[in-house]
Figure 1 (cartoon, rainbow, N blue to C red):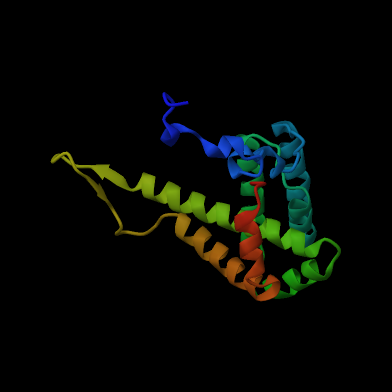
Figure 2: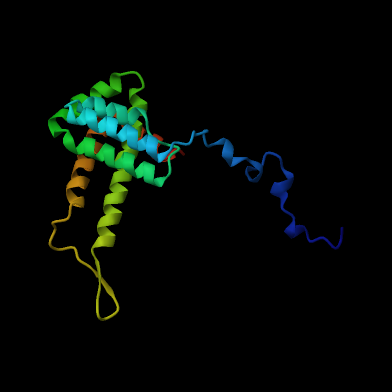
Length: 186
């Protein structure tokens, strides 16, 4: 025992209640895999509802079936569908529609899914607009062009921020916390 340095002993490995011995996979719920073709079929059904004038039905259909188990391409397709729905709804219809969805069975969960899509849409519009506006210069430095406007990301961001404001009014700030702590991503 004299040749063993006590400072190198990992005592967490010896303690069964240690967080180092906790299986993190038990925190993630089981998610069934979803193919991209299934996501595309769902997106076409939702777009048909939207073209038919049933924007609330389209939004509920998109929020009730989030493709948690899809690959990145499938998730991007569904995100584009949700953003298309959100952009097609007038601002005066937002609060009544969110109130009806919230009072329906499974409504709070649907609004949490909507909050996930709003945050993912915000992250993608800001990331795509910053990478698109970088121009290399002869000096070797890159310059980000912030002048000129005319990019499509600003309008999408404005729509998403309007939805975020109305959603927090209806669902409360707890929705933000639930979305930030949920391990299922859209």
